[in-house]
Image (cartoon, rainbow, N blue to C red):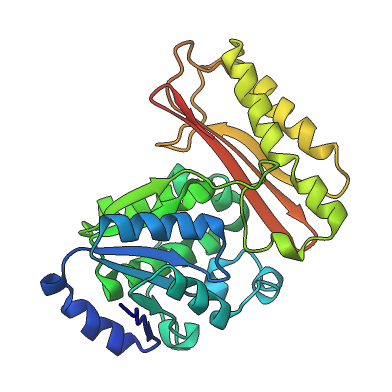
Length: 297
């Protein structure tokens, strides 16, 4: 049977389509910036497996980025994305114009608060977290999904959406899937192909640095400063990488889960290790997660 994916660019058409979902079964939604890669495809396949309808958005807005430079250099190729989505038998590609989503008279933003909004990405690039929170809230309103799928690689974004859904009583279930990695452990990214060979080699240090932190913890190390310094030292070994942060955080609260002397709990069950670096005008982030005593790497 021939598959015909609908490509929706109009907000009104998306709203009208979403009104008809109830009759057609559950809706799985994968929000993306476009320029899809293997990590996105794993989310899409899970959405298709679990739901009767699969919607993928490809929205690129300056609000999602830490700087205009980063936004301007982000790759875009809607025809390539459409072909990949057709191959995956996605039902709807929602590709609105950012100018229609955020017109010049747009004034209402979702403003996250607390440690989740002020640490890590929030400390370095708070406006991009607010932009992301606002965008996802709008997309949920337009698409009206039953389930929404996110990758672990951008864990802070997932945690932010989890908080928004809880605080604003948005009727959607969230699923986070493991990070998909290349053969050398590098997390798939839409921008890897833009790296020079030396930069690509340097960026592959992120994953081993995270694993070094994990290894220390498994050996019984509980001094937070020691764990964070070990991860940072591995990354700054490359002159091409500018480290923003290499830290351990509580994955629920985003606070440092330490006592007054800077020690992690002896019986450690939940921990996020996360590293973010700059390479030229690009930013890359990666993490591994200890959840209920098991590592998701």
